[in-house]
Image 1: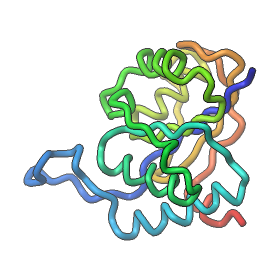
Image 2 (image 1 turned 180 degrees about the horizontal axis):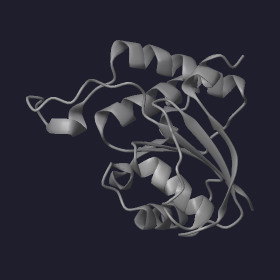
Image 3 (image 1 turned 135 degrees about the vertical axis):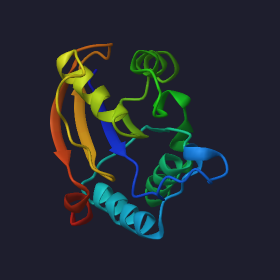
Image 4 (image 1 turned 90 degrees about the vertical axis):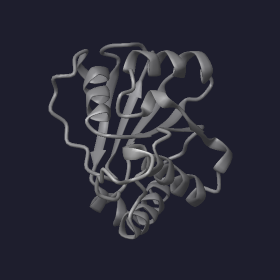
Length: 169
């Protein structure tokens, strides 16, 4: 059975600040980032994308991005957090978690950070992290996978910019 894997980079967030309590993990989406993400999520829905699971980094900006998608889809229970999507996450462990903990989920949205996400896409497409992929804030990638495993196992179906998603009707 084919798995559809959607890779979404978090929306526009606050600038890094050494004075932020909790550090980088507590950076929120900006007002503009949240508004644009709402339009992106509506574009995703207009494209008839469906999800069995929304798996997000626990970092606040990714979690808020995932919550916006879950709200637009009226599916808050689909959202789960995993430290394996944090910027220092391990792709091998993430793939194992998907296979072990979510084997029945065949349409999965992953929400996280760069450069981790483009490295993950590269790994799944080519078996290495050397492909140069640009995933803008709020950008979305669609992959199909016959059998998920660490290494080359995916086909790139499309890569959309935030602007393309916001204009989808």
